[in-house]
Length: 336
Image 1 (cartoon, rainbow, N blue to C red):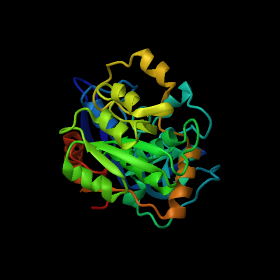
Image 2: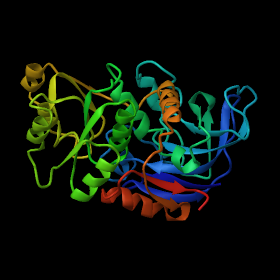
Image 3: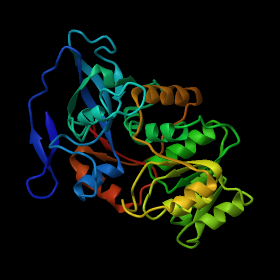
């Protein structure tokens, strides 16, 4: 099978190769990959900005494909099934544990940027019929993170207000999921063009932070000085202080990314004075993924796809991701 694999000999690079099909254990599943999807952290590894553990594995945590072989003790899927997989092979449910890091797809366990991938059946989720492989490949990290972030402490409720940042995968999925349950969504972004796309997807109002750098003040105006109930922070260093200022007293901030850097800091008084709940979101469990798929199926929700690249042009897909110009998910189609 054709593979792409990390090489860390000097600086992180991607190396193409031909490898034999993986040998299956008794509870392993062999999947012919139809599509995979990039996330910010995939580029962060190459930029040496990713703080997590990464080994010389096949990259990319998100993908979808067809089951072509199963181990003798597999019970959760069968040959011919259309499937995706949880980003952490053995995180079925409950809180995130340190031990799950050893089975992180695309980081410590071979991921989806190859013609085939072998996974333990614990990771497998079944795609609903209405989603294509390209659409199904976009969900495992960004969509599950959005679902987990919006339901991390208490489930998102109709009528609540949510602030999302930008037009990347997590932000757009957060917008779609929040609107799906009847919440009101505000957004910030870098251009009027992107603002129009966010409004098309259901954002009530959008602040262009390029022309209005004090976007927290604008969000307070939009919420009658109260602030939002929920905030999904994808940037980290350059946004967290204003995120706190934009959130209502007793509100929740889900920190899900580090697009603007891993430094910075929020004064404790900003948290204390507003009685904020701030917590990191480590994607989510398989049960979260399955709950997301059930909700999406009920509403026939479709992911926003920015651009689809053939496997042979995977480097162009990474360049599209690195540009920051995307609106939605960047996909690599193995069949193109």
